[in-house]
Length: 210
Image 1: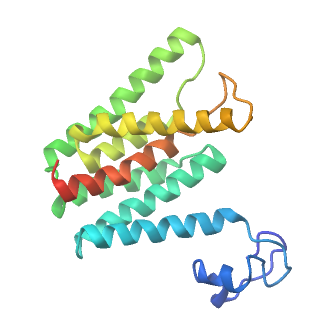
Image 2: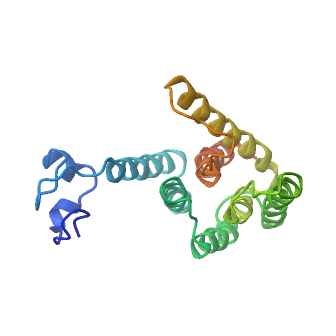
């Protein structure tokens, strides 16, 4: 249904990217501009699928793409709503265990990664709360990092965390250089940064070995 007027959307108008281009970025039913987020998500999903297809053949490539598409959903929800549903993280975690059937690393490294990912961010959040008296991480962030650990194994967690932190710092720097206000207590979608870092990490691990 149309986000603006609630009218049903034709099947042909649901074709990713192409339909928005044909409609010149406006809804057919009411003429209101289509939210850029729709195109951004569709483009991200297309890039995820393309990258997976280049790196791996089927069926492993489909598994890698599924990981990326779940991360796109996680990143979008956290960036727009500051919310990562537990069922989505659970699906990601279960997928990480099952992916051991077709992708490296072995299951043992994945299980260690799951525990290390969750435990490390939980401890950071706990320590921050004790020192500052306020939440420093969202409750879903340790769970998400644990699920990522089940996909990547423990060896890839430090670079993913580093890249996620650099992405966050880069966004802060961009906001400062463009004159946007930045406060110390501003909430940041760290789950989005983790998702952005995790997918290329998996591609590199699969392509070059962990």
